[in-house]
Image 1 (cartoon, one colour):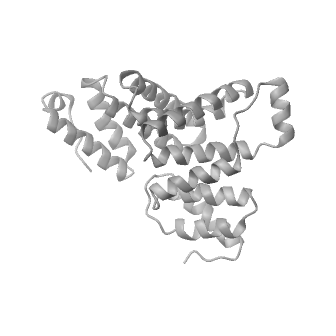
Image 2: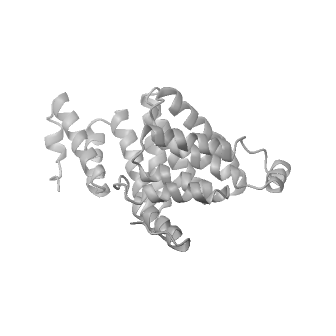
Length: 249
């Protein structure tokens, strides 16, 4: 493990050393050691409270930690992620990663809200993802989340949409076609990220395109972990492969 950096030491760092400190937090994140990453980012944020690079990273790590935390303990982590992401956007409105991780946080927060708030959040999520991609067309995570967003819309039946329009308000446009395009773009940008292929495979199952789903799962189960939540995705994909008489070897 990287030793914890004290506030006193961090306050004495020059700009190059501060970059190195951020990199040490990133290294902990890539090792999937989210608590260690938070320690580093928190220390940096204390001495540089308006640094967007630290703030969006804090949003990211809290979303990712929430994803592997017991369900009844996740909401506060997603709420913290939202606050960090909004702060990042406030101090640097052209840093796309703030919008990406705000959308990720809001997508999770929506699970704890009522129907009307869910619909309101759906428009904000779409808006933030569009902004993230406009600022950084190489942001595979934004495309991946957008694909999941459209997949969720595609899974809403016509009658459910009509009822929502009558009683709650209209839903954003989009569905399976847009989901597939977004997820394929995420894979083009980052072909070795498990999440992208898992989501595309799940979409293909929703679309009754079983062979396409199996192809994505066969590739994804052998990819390296980039998120701690990938462990759950690999288990799910292996279960699907086994159910269909497939081997992951």
